[in-house]
Image 1 (spheres, one colour):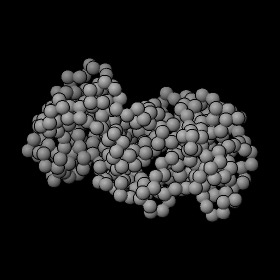
Image 2 (cartoon, helix red, strand yellow):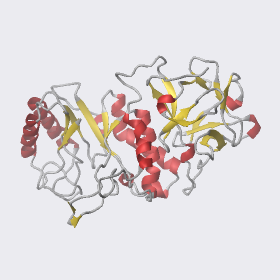
Image 3 (cartoon, rainbow, N blue to C red):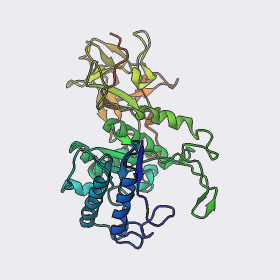
Image 4 (spheres, rainbow, N blue to C red):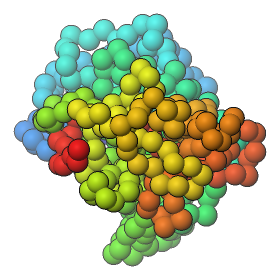
Length: 395
């Protein structure tokens, strides 16, 4: 499927606040020319069934940006696309490099059509400077995720589709800012179940910013475009390539919860009653309920998740009244699944990945304070809703 994206008006590398392409009325951004261009492109691809959407303008920005002109011209552009091609989705981007749609919480767009409007959001680590590297990972993840929800995520609660149309990282794995951000964004993307597009595929450029053959370290492909740059990265995003919820998904037990582990892109699964819980494909995950009593119960059974102690494997049991079976989501990231066993006093244990890289154990919760050097990601589990078919369940 293809989405046509009106990126900039004067060809070149995108973007900055003063490049003359940022907002309506800028040197290279005539709104009337832009509207005619949208009409031409929408009409040109009217019969191309694989062209499913048109994004009206990439990353509006710069000193001239304002909400009133956004409504005026984006509504005009949306109507132009719809008139020329009633089949395509119409995708609207926000202000400040497509980081801000918050103004829509006060006033929604008014259009002559419905059921084909989509909003898009961009989210990179560098959108927040060096916050990820210079702060406690849990606190930064919680604060920035909350900001994303205020700036764009609220649209989902209003019933509008929200498309994460750009995100990505330096795939060499050496950028601490990107590395910390990536686990957080994967967790939130899984919970919200948003559609997304990754920046970027290409491994290099013929010419970029005057440099011949520049390498693209955010690229999925290597410099020669022949191999994946980072197989681990692909594994982590592969789970999100299929929806967890939505039309076309049929499950005998819905809705239900699953444990998604953003660091690996896998979920908590169990092969049989004799094998402890471990990481595996999310399509093989059990269906869980998170009850009002704070137990994590296997759906349709009397069994609940129980902690055995520091470094010990978790298992299921029928005594769901003990403190070892009570679980809470703690830390600002909301990804620490924690229990406070009687035997450990006030010390909390969190779900964690064992030393073998697969088995699910409990260990002392990490990074709950202000320490900026710690790494909590093996303990990051997102409990998310799913409607995928349950392939197997053991009782």
